[in-house]
Structure formats: C-alpha cells, structure tokens
Length: 251
Length: 328
Image (cartoon, rainbow over all chains, first blue to last red; front, side):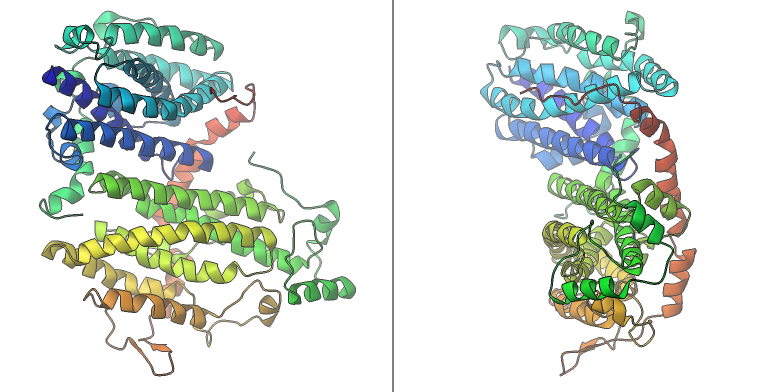
C-alpha cells in the first residue's frame, strides 16, 4: 500500500510544485497589477500544497525531507502531468490551464477528504478551501474573456483547444489505480475525470466557448510515469540553480 | 479602467495657473503647520498637487519596477522557506504599487497615464532598480539594505501632509519591516555559511554600496533645496540626513557579520555623522538619464507586460459578468 500512496502523493505534490513555479512567473508581468497579485497568491498556495504533500511523504512514508524531494530529484523522478510543465505562454493559455487544472484539483481534494489515509484526508480539507478561490478566479476570467471581445474569445477558444489534450493527461492512471480504489484511499482517476467534465462543461458553454472534441489518441500521457515534455528539464535546472552552486550549504 | 480620479472641474482649470489665492494659501499652510492632513477634496496649491503626483507616482513605479530584479529569482530560490518568502515579498511590492497608484489617482492622474509616462520616460523610478541582481546574494542584500533604505525614506514621508499618501505609507512600512527581517535572515545565513556563500555576499555588498549611497539622492550641497516643499511637508528630511540615518542603522549590522564595505573611509565620527568617500555623482546622473546597466531592460519588460496584456484589459472593459459570490 505504501508504494501506491507514494505514487499518489508524488504526482499531486509534483503537479502543485510545477504549476506553482509557472504561476510565480507572472509576478511583475501580468496584464494588470491585480493579476500579478492573483497569480502570485495562487503560486504561494500551490507551492505550499507541494510542501505539505512532501512533508507527508517524509514524515509518514519515510521519504527524504521536503526540500530534498523538491530540489534534489532528477527529471525522471518527477510524476507531474505535462500540462503543468508547459511555459506560461500568453495570458489566455495561463488562465485556461489554470481553469482546467484547478477544477480537477478541487474535485480531487474533495474526493480525498473521504480518504482512508488520514494525513491526506486532513490536508485535503484545508487545501480544498484554498483551491476554491483559485477556481473562482479562473471561472471569472474564462467567462469574462470568453464573452469579451472578438480577439479575447478567439484567443480563449484557441488556448482551450490547445490545452485540452494536455489537460486530459492529468487523469493518466497509475499501476496502483485499483489498489488505491479498493483501499479507499482515492476513488480513482476515471471517477475524477467524469466529475471534472460534468463540472467544466457548463462553465465553458456559459463563456460561449466550445468544449473541444476529445481524440483519445491525442491525449498527452507519460508525465505520471516520468516521461516529460522538453520544458521540464530546463524548469528544474532553473529551480535548482542556486542549490547546485553549493550542494551542501544551508540556504 | 482602474478607477476614477478626483479632480474637480474647477481644480482642473486651475492646473495651468501659477497664481494662488493668498487667503486660501494661508489657510492651507496654517492647516499644515497645525499638523492637519490634507485630503483629496480639500483646496491645495497647484504646485503641491503636482509635486505630490510626481513623488507618489515615482514611488509607485519604483515598487513595480523594483519587483522585476527580485522576481527573476523566485523561480531559483533554493528552498521552500526562501521561495515562499520571496514570492510573498515581491507580491507585497506589486501591492504597494497598486496602493500608491490609487493614492496618486486621488490627485487627478489616472493609473494609465502614470504607466504611460513610465514607459515613455517622462516619469522616473528609483535609480537603484537599474542595477542587476546577479546572484542569490543580491536578493539577500536587496531584501535587507535596499528595503532598509526605502524604510528610512518612507517612515519619514509617512509624517507628511497628504492624507492618502501617509496612510498608504503606514501600511507599506508595516509590510516592509517583514521584508527587512527576511532580508536580514538571508544575509545572516550567507554570512555564517560556506566559503562560497560568504564570497557571493561580499561581492553583492561591494556592488550595491554605491547604488545605496545614491539611493537618497545628491548631497544637500548639490541639490536644490526647496523650503516651500519642507513647509508644505511634502519633503520632510534632507538627503544627507536620510543617508546618515541609513548608514547609522545598517553599516554596523553588516560589519558585525565580518563583511566589509568597499570604502576605506567609511566611519562614524564623534558627532554621530558618518563619513564616506563621495560616490561618483556623474554615474548617478548617467543612470537617471537612462544609461544604467538595466534601464533599457526594465522598461522593455514593462512595455512587454503592457502590450501583451492589452487585449485582456480591453476585454474587461466590456463587463458581462456580475460580481462572483463566494462559494461558501
């Protein structure tokens, strides 16, 4: 059971760390100061979630400490989905990614409040309350920009189409799927995906955008098994730049 | 799109005149002398308004431009503690910018106009942000000493006469004092760390020393002294006084870590006045006029943000969504 739990915690923590990294890149360059602040806040929350999940891995499951797990692992060891690795692009991509990712996060943590693994169930209750606001932010902008101007609508649709098959990669199943379900740790990616589609479809429609057509063969899998896009390695090199200048130093 | 400004029609008409009604001027000045705050709707001399706009606007620009050199290190911060502290700090700076633009708007200039003037070079920001943050130690030095210098300036200005600016500054100083703590903590870790860590800290201090002396502006003997601005409590302390206060507070804290400043003449005299080698004031002028190492880059990044974000702002001008009610 411990391997199944570790797999689940690593993929969630890595997702949060990497999307937090990407969100933090908006600090100083957002379309208006209010959005610098919003993305910066969400980055802090996400990085905090990653830290909390790594702490469970450390304290309950015997892995290294949070800083070591975040700053001293190889690219191959990361289990994040490829959606979160993608560069921030323009604001339309970042907000669409946030929308697709955070709805999945909110439902995932909601499901996890029922987890038989108590440390995760406890954390989920707290994190859920924070992600609620991330989702509110995404929904507001998706609707507003979907219905804004001709340009904003076109940009949002195009980013939604682009991000769609990456987003479906969030739900890539692990080899431990059945074990997680039967042990009541997590109700599974399939269930999560179903609830996610039900949740986001009416919002996309309310934004007067079209839900992209899913082509199973185009879904971008691999992240959960350590296969990443070309963007993760440079991101990690940047993240670990200072640490690597003096690997034994305390910072 | 950000908010409305506060200039009445009558005040707008007066903006180009230089002659003030002597009775109103006297009443205004005696209010200030009594320590009262001037509020947006109150009568004020045109020059007072213009000086305050210039000052608050520059301060606001300094906050958002100042976020850039530090912002590039958020993604490279070496552990969770430092990363979370740095994002929160840079976010505070942006928030200060937002607060200050609002304070300046109460005097009649919109945020768009101010941002446009930043990009076209009409209005300035603090020179200190035209220098690069080359290593992680620069983040420590900026957090401790640049923020320390800013606090000296801001605490003094918070005793000024314009209500909205003073209130913004009080809040800003409160947050800045946390920045100072994280900056100091970071400096102490580096100073008591490995050989490499001490070396990058010393190197950063060497590079930031002159920009820090420049931070408070030219020496009093060189800068035009405005008694009127002092009387109106727009300016409250001289450049030299502020610089001396800064050196007095911060030099000993660096020395006690066995880190030096690159100036053999730096010392405190018996009369409490700090002595130092006169920094190159021609360099100060060169940097102010766009010749610093990072001027072009800073403005280019702001221009990119303005241009890349234009479609978002335009789309928001056409609001179709009502305020979102919190989910719980």
